[in-house]
Length: 310
Image (tube, rainbow, N blue to C red):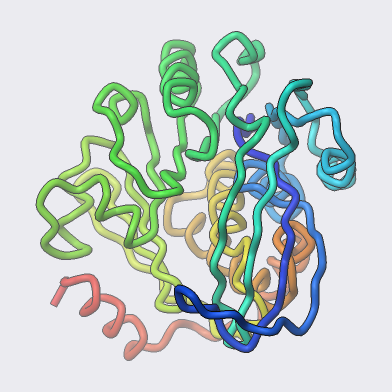
């Protein structure tokens, strides 16, 4: 059983030909709202695509923006521990999605910043605590230390990118980052193979977008090429990866098996618009994997070369 502690935002999404440059105005092609927030996205991914019992600790305001967020989590069978922040609005994100499926995101955290140590529920029965960095860093650190003290595995998706205090890293079992986030926590960047070794965490997983992902577990390095799909919207793909990776680890999968399932789920998430709305079911992930050919030696070598393994 997994506890996700983190953010919930209502996403305001505009599709446009390209992401505006500073000072540029771009005419959009459509506007939609979707339930989002890294924490809520990852909770839905754990429950729906990962197929594992999932709880979420989140904070929302007393406004209409909270309603679709709570409804989406309930629809995914996520058990809620909800903190009401009467003096703060529910978190919101403003997202521009370009025709090439890339996105740019600005977040107004609102109620997410009110999560405090006193809100952490009893951790009895949980195997993993999954967190992100859209809630106060001091709260994330306190939660991680409390979970470590009770024997609960701590997984941190260090996003958005920022330096991490040593006391937080000391309580983390699995760190998940993309390349930019990895650069924020590595003192002396060299290569994707050597950089994770500079982080005092037992397991570091690095997502590499359309290239795939890589991981260091102890002194062993693993790679997993991405599964090719026709991408429509990459919003939420990284969160889908995080949630499914933790769900697979919760179910006893090895790190390589977990990376395969997480990569497949993230690929499928790119084929649909929105964050939570794009997250596939566990059955869809299994069927997708069953239909995939073995990774070619060329794609494996390309990824290994990119990571500096040659």
